[in-house]
Length: 255
Ligand SMILES: [Zn+2]
Ligand SMILES: [Zn+2]
Image (tube, rainbow, N blue to C red; front, side):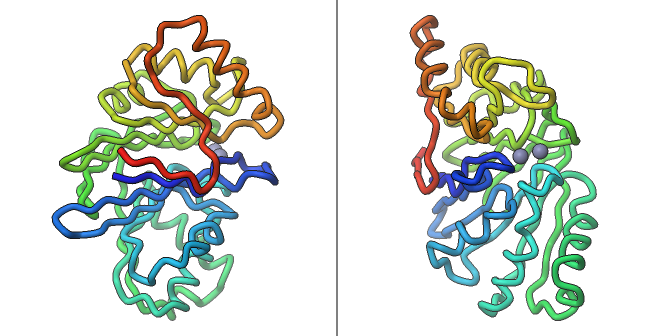
């Protein structure tokens, strides 16, 4: 499994594109490609690498804030321009089909009727396991200003966790447990930003559940400048063996 950080920023960050991950795997000769979250800036990041029209198998939407799904209309339109024919899965919380249809109608009225590739929607609610594009998908609710789902992906080789927005909860920590890599939002350094994780909180969670590897992103744009120092301070005090880092846009990690 290969994870590329297309963007690592929060909604208002003008230096770092919106948080989004590209997950790729090659199982049994099949290349699979998933896009996790698709905010305002994400389609340009995605298409910059010149993917083929049919490369993308599925899109995950963690919740319905603009920096996580307002890129969907542009993504779908550009794939249409590229003459995609293959169905595209769109997975997310309950209501994902209605929200995507509404966004599409607002951005490009009448476009949905002209699309020549089908959209296949799947709700992935906690307690349900869905199998799509060679992965098993499971979710748990995080603590955010709007209902938001953390995601765990498993294939026969690896397990991977992506928090979306939101502070960890006992359910999301259980979901992350046993994963080779967790990617977690950490909007604040140590404080109690309502509805968001913090660097300190994420590092404590990693130690609690024995994570081997933790990437932190979606950090508040001014606090990001202090984030490295905060991580070093914490690691110097603890016995954590977890690899912790702040990925840069475009960076790829292979699990
Ligand atoms: Zn949000
Ligand atoms: Zn966000």
